[in-house]
Length: 146
Image 1: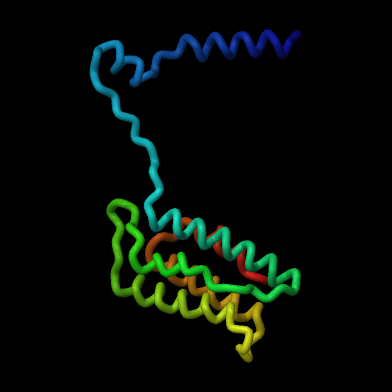
Image 2: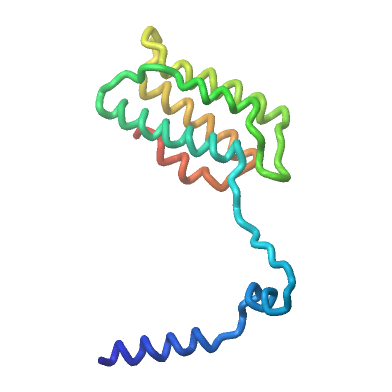
């Protein structure tokens, strides 16, 4: 009963607040534009790369050899960036190295153990992100195989 009373009071407080700019714009017949986040082509690609590498990490931990390099990773050279961002020489160099290290993960004849090859690729992601878009670094670090 006590919780119900608090819930009613809280609901009334919320309903009595007047801070709705979209409702005000509609009432005044003004156009109101929502600023919706739409991920860029590059952001979507990087999220796909993360998901794929998460699966590769699990495969490696399960003792499985990854089968085939995902060709969609090559879009890193052409995908559109988030507004206000762009390619530069540093990004281009890191992306070429990233593709190279990713391809090496799928090389069954490599003399370097699979875990090291995978971690090298992930560490390259971290290094690149330290130069520009630092937000996802903590997420990327979770891919490293200990």
